[in-house]
Length: 418
Image (tube, rainbow, N blue to C red; front, side, top):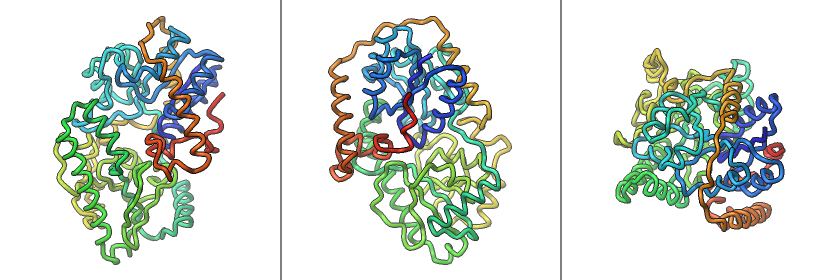
């Protein structure tokens, strides 16, 4: 079976896709992994040359996105497209951004859901239950052993000059306020979620105000606070950081967040869903509501954790209260499920189960000029990336915003294609 898997974000998706590829390869399948934003043309060329039976995609929400997928149906009308839905949790205000909006997006792909929570949202959006598979969460990783935690923590301490005798507070950022990101997110909200321009602007103003307060709170912490704690501030992937957090807090964006969760003692966030992974790892999780968040903008599950309004509320006593407040049935199980050592097998079984079904789809019409546009755009991005011009020019917008996800020249991506 010939399988092509698209990814959007390296850190978020590649480890999971590699595990799935390994399991499918054991079953005799050929699997190639491509960036949906930067390697579409390569993926299409591979499908033309070798054929394609299954297409795994990170998202597909509406018919006008189908110009990316229709050409593959032309190569094989019996193609099975599976929407892995790599984002499944979002506030009520932005819910429609992550859900199918029309008949094409509901009925063409098959839909993989982590838990019944997102399955129910898909059904409410118009997806037939028969096209949904609740398969668990392939992106979850096992909790590190004490030995692994110690080793990783020691390595981080040496590399970033952190004190292992102190408690490490990992602050995971979920807000992006750079102009390019706000433009894209604003378009998604107004076009996909039917959010009014005024509500969208209020939403962003709340982001900006809350982030300013977070920065001011960290910078205002007395030096005595850092006698007991280290603060590791993790920007949202792809964010441009143009601020300082003072003398003591560290801004560190290198690598995936999972090793940092496993190395830290306390987790704090505005609304990052990494809170679920931190809870799973046994960390006390603080929901940092630096400004009041309306119900429609609260991240499901994340806002149920122990709430604080100022970073200086984190101390030994509040950490103890936070741990005691943990529910017997952990919050994360409803939204992201639990780590399952057999998740790779379940996903591969589900992929094969869908592939075995008899189904043929007509071609969703699309503008064929897009093929040439994608080919030309990818050539330009390859050139600009090679000569380190994208960040200097802040162009093209997508490449600038997703710079860390560009695979060209990245040694970690050389094994992704057949």
